[in-house]
Image: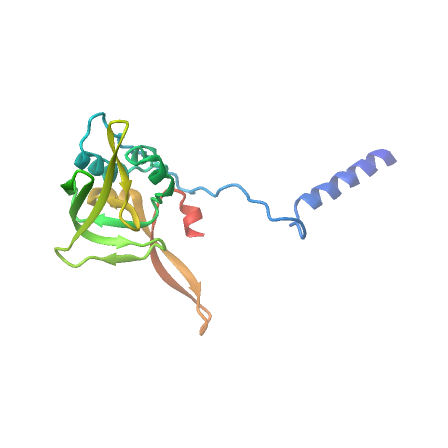
Length: 204
C-alpha cells in the first residue's frame, strides 16, 4: 500500500513539473503556429514551360506568385537557384487594379520591363497604401539563360508578389491589431493586411 501511494505521489509530482515553465537553460524553438482558419481552396499555378521566351518567364513568375499554398515552389522555378534563395515572397505586395497579365517589354535580351495598373501596395508590416486613380506600377527584371532556358536572375528591389484584383480577397485580408493606449484604459485598433497562410504567426 505504501509503495502504491509513493508511486502516485511521484507521478503527481512529475505531472506538476511538466506543467510549469522552465526558469533556466537555453531558449528552444517551438512548433510553428499555423492558421486557425485553414484555406479550403488551394490554388497553384504552373511553372515554366520549355522554350518560353523572356517575357513569358517574367509574366509566369508574377502569375505563379498568386498561389495560396504559402510555399511558391512553382514561382521559384522561374528564378535562378541563387535568386530563388534570396527572394522573399513577403516583401512588398503590389495589388493590381485588374486581372489581365501585366504588359511585358523586352528592353534587351537580358532585361524585361513589366507594367500594370495598380490599386495599392502592402508593406512587410501589413500597412496598405492606396494608389492614385489611374496609377501604374512598373518593374524591371534581369534574365539569363540557364541550360538553354530563360530564368530570372535579377529581381526589382523589394519585390514580393504582384496580386491580381480577383486574387486579393483569396490571398490577403484586413485585420485589426490592437495596442494598449498610454493615456486611457483602452486599446487602439490598427488595421493591417496580411496573407492568409500562416496567419496566426503573422498576426503575432
